[in-house]
Length: 498
Ligand SMILES: Cc1cc2nc3c(=O)[nH]c(=O)nc-3n(C[C@H](O)[C@H](O)[C@H](O)COP(=O)(O)O)c2cc1C
Ligand code: SF4
Figure 1: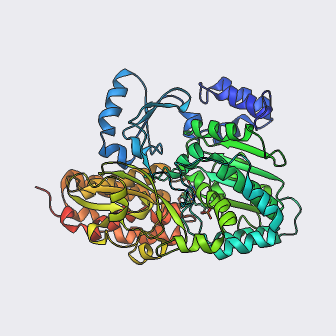
Figure 2: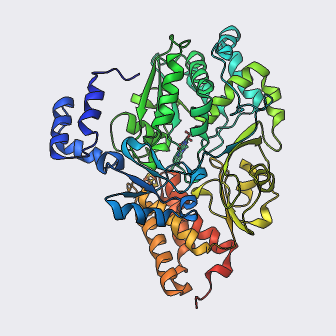
Figure 3: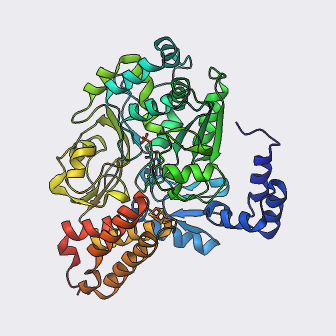
């Protein structure tokens, strides 16, 4: 944990509250020996450093719930930054005040009722004795990975990559210095499940990290939590302070308001103190990750599944799924009665999820199954499994399972434009197809919304192809998807405007 009086803390103190003032940059340069120009170059990448102060969310769910009106109201009182997504879609519309704490927000979203049969069971209680870690030590590293393989656990951070392959790869590396990293940067609009795990079941994640370090022989554990989640960081630190994991070295790193830092190699760059720009792969983090050493990186939810898999067996976990292994935390927001995080068998349909979330508000028209990156789908697919394979077959993705429901009061061209603004704002800018393409998509939608002339959109598919083929990372590859899928499924929203 961050020691009071450490150099890192002194740097954070120098920046806190004043942003990148000349004095702050000079102080950081003095403390670190990094040239002032580099301090400026890195610092300006991170909006929480460069633009301190209140922030109001402009994610799709917040906009649906009156995010623009809230922004205008707050702007009338003073400076407020309009930002991409604050990870509070169930409490929309929201704003953050001092120290990134929630200022305006609705009541807490729903969760599934207490059910010990579930894997994460958000309504349940942590077991402070860390029984899965003790069991892992008895089983030994190889047997733990075999159990993960038997469970079929797929990564919950977006790509669905089998967890056991990464664990085995890092364990097999001969290099004596290795790291485990927990990706808690959760920034995809529509997604807020990792937030609930950290707040409600922090020990599940901490225990899994300790198991991962034991199994792979890693010397330190990094937890990278987005800076807009101070309450979640507090919950993790409080859980650690209760004791039981003293054999492991946990290091907390705060994100500073850059969505792209959720991409694994950008996150590594960020921990190393640079702008969070994704690296070319290979080499993969399992081979050369943090500080060039083999690194196991997993999402919060992926990790939180591990204790249950070890204690109750991989076969049980596998069988819990409907179409793919395990249960899944689905985030639900938009036009539904009880937005929240619901744990359902992986492969549950939209209709089943919305039934858990209290039903639709109004007449449903469309849904986005996995955050902004997944584009939009029509209600004719509301009984299809929300899983990795089925959604890919429909040209979409489960991603981080941030499900946003849209009813028939919504203009799908407007939805595409809101998501296009997000990708343009969050592109790190290092590859031209993404940097320029994201801007062109947004401009085309702006022009269409202003003029009603569909000719403005005729090059969107071509642009999308260029972006998919020419981008280094997933952001550029999907940035045109909301526009492409909205046009594909809702062509009646893209005709000539009156
Ligand atoms: C633009 C972009 C943003 C991402 N954001 C996140 C994130 O916030 N949290 C996360 O766990 N994974 C995120 N990922 C996926 C990570 O790169 C990586 O696949 C994941 O952390 C691996 O963990 P898993 O195997 O447990 O899913 C993102 C990927 C991309 C391309
Ligand atoms: S695709 Fe976009 S976000 Fe990803 S590395 Fe390239 S410019 Fe950065």
